[in-house]
Image (cartoon, rainbow, N blue to C red; front, side, top):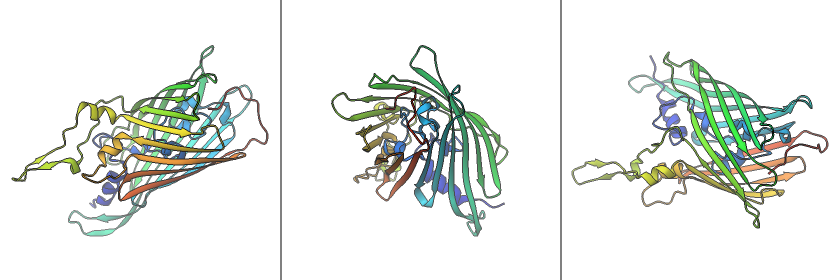
Length: 348
């Protein structure tokens, strides 16, 4: 029986930094495919008026998103490509807005080999997730809650898996307040069928986030604390290991503070309400796990910009993973409403 060793090499390159110990399957579910999100660090939970955001936090679904559509494309590592499409629709004046998203990952053509390493041909691998979301404002409060229902399919050569998952989110915001807070539980579910008959865990995650709009400076700051379901998410970086004269290897000693910061993602957006805005983000965990000794790689840094032209928004993000690799993400969103509608919520 052939071993598809090439796939696992690509898998480690793509998702190794984002999951703990490789204990989950379908880890692409926690990889950002949205340009604005990516530019701000990759896991921001409090973006409003953005039709791509409900994929990460369904509580952000509101009337502002009605008839908005967005398409994103990422040229990822090792010739891997990621694409996503989001759309929101309000079906009647008596209903809230429904949100849908499709995220697709194409791992390209990979080399198959037998147990002795002899090449036997090629194969393809891909993942896709389809979600439907809805939110609800708790009466007499500024708290919104929402959920996503997701179907996931993964394929590696002739093997495949299907899975079912739910996301739940809650967000607090008010148009007159400069701050927003949010709590999200993502990927609560299970495989329906597996690659090899053994059911594996989905990349379940609990995260909290907040943002604050400065009063006298046009900057909104963002912070996310992720993976609250597991405290120790640190993985030793081989580049930081030490070797003595006898060849004994001492692994990197990761401190309490170091591990704590690996849960943190920060971002900032300059001119968030203007037609042109600039964004920057920093992922502490990605920076530490892809660090090289005595080399400044700028791993974990991301930045980008947004440009709004009437009803069209263009977004771009650049993410630095390593001194030898970087990622570009492109996005375009369109408001399909022909005229301005009077809506009940305010964009931030």
